[in-house]
Image (cartoon, rainbow, N blue to C red; front, side, top):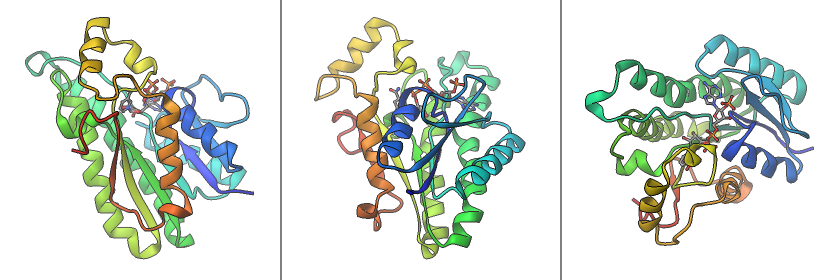
Length: 234
Ligand code: NDP
């Protein structure tokens, strides 16, 4: 029957590729969306990850439908770029809320059931820029760097319960998020990527699926770059 998987922001982009990848191998997959509905074949729950009560409701719905979440993929995220001197405080706190505090919210809600089951997998989608920094992204880079400390602390707290927590750090992936970048910026980024191309969302999904698989049972607290060599392993 497969495992009970939840992917936040699984209605499009990288999250959708991750959700489909788990569904293909027979897992029961739920995704969160913010009103767009679920793509065909996936169970959708409406949830804004900045709202703790909505997160709790979404987990309850998923648990009723497919059992307690055994694999959590915290993927939902936003950007609100701007240079430090021009960035308003709300642009900073909103991005940290959606990208980092939300990861805490979903991890905490998932953890209670995982601890009881004495098994669980958590994967957090960070970014190469969380480790390298990025001009114009102090908010986003800080939120993505924060996920590393979050995951590694969970790895230490819950390792004895057979719960792993890992981070995937994608480089530039062809999705709506990167399509927003000006053409000149895209070319500049590509010039720094040894593989000379953007990643496909499926290439991120494959690594997430591996980290949730039996083959990765002894990997926890890791940061796995999937960036075409952009960060050179950091
Ligand atoms: P997209 O912009 O294509 O999709 C973002 C997803 O996050 C959507 O499903 C969106 O839902 C959801 N989301 C955003 N805010 C919230 C919220 N408050 N509550 C619930 N869901 C929310 O992004 P990508 O697929 O490109 O990115 C996915 C993840 O990968 C993000 O964390 C991103 O930071 C990270 N990443 C992306 C890279 C890239 O090059 N694309 C590189 C490195 C990391 P909705 O449809 O409702 O807006």
